[in-house]
Amino acid sequence: MSAPRGKVFVIAAPSGAGKTTLRDYLLHAHPDLYFSVSATTRTPRTGEVIHKDYHFMSKAQYDQHLAHGDFLEHAEVFGNYYGTLRAPVEEQLSQGRNVLLDVDTKGARQVKEQMPEALLVFIMPPSIEELERRLRTRNTDCEEVIQRRLREARYEIDQRQCFDFIVVNDTLSNAQAALDAIMYPEHR
Image 1 (cartoon, rainbow, N blue to C red):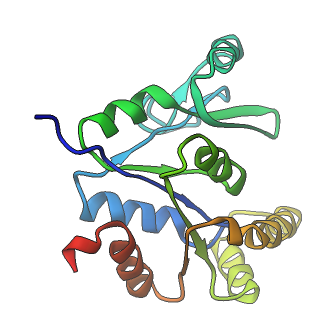
Image 2 (tube, one colour):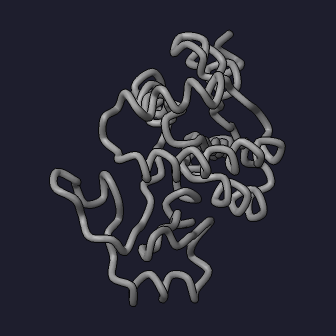
């Protein structure tokens, strides 16, 4: 008898909303959860590990995957290409493992089109003002980048109605509890 099929959970959020922190929490709290590593054509940054941070590939390899319909979602971002390969996700699902994808709002919609059973979770900041404060206290971006991230955030927040769940990251513990309730309701 085969294991019941796993579930696909997709999280998306504006930059600064705490998505990476929440993703890391979920992977630590639920070691059975499989994290789908994205593919990209960009070159690895210092400290990034191949097949852990990204599946790095040439543009020709990426185009071949795209032509064969191998991506659940894909996008061009600032001249680099990104995508979620379908095969590893399907393999984990068939083994009964739940799968977590960390993508942008456009990618989340693409996944939902191909896998209607996927549950989309949007991580909301408590307010645009708080999001701006978080972006500024990072001290990693110049003013131009902060303003671009805020414009993108407004667009992404407008897309939240496409998601199955909205989690407001007002406090880390509240957001963690909300994600646990969505993803693992049987543990409540």
